[in-house]
Length: 295
Image (cartoon, rainbow, N blue to C red):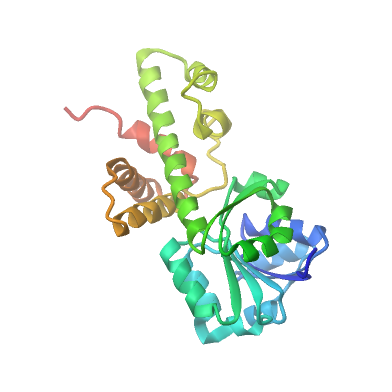
């Protein structure tokens, strides 16, 4: 278990709670915190130690994991009133939220005299969080990423070292751009085929046996969309946010990526019309509703 014995887990929502539970069951002393009393109560039922105070949760911690909605909240939670100083000097901060890469670099500068920062966002959704088979995209020094592996390997099946601090969050936004574009393409494909007279299930089966196969056709169309369950566990607004991070990164690098821009705009519209809290697989409803010709 290397030198990490106590892990402070900040953010006990749908993703954070099973991740923290897996660390607890692996033998780490896990102290959880969430601003939501309901989330704290649910985590306590899982056998986790839960603190009502963030400062107490990270006090004397060897490793802080943040699993929060965005980088603004991470900075507010840790940097405000220098709360991060409660942790051991030299402790690891594993920033696993979906944050903007340049903001993550700023965070590293703010806390870097006290904490070693590795940004380590994940992909895989709630099901793989429960299984401990998430994919982790890590950014930081080689030494710090190596130090973090005893924790990361409990909650994931694959850990990719992507580069310096910020690289993990850059990779996460790129991944979700491709994922979100795939959901749109698969939804439009089904709309096109069914309008012609094909069966939706047949379309998906053929795509999955052919070169059109992607994550949306494999693990979303039949499981969450065609059966109208819309319960993948990942919000439409979060997907939109992540794609927006990729679009903003492209602009900051002076890149003119038209498909990324269009995908970003489409998910923003869907988030507004369908609702950001809706499951992201409801993009299918947005696509089908807006697919009729206006001419």
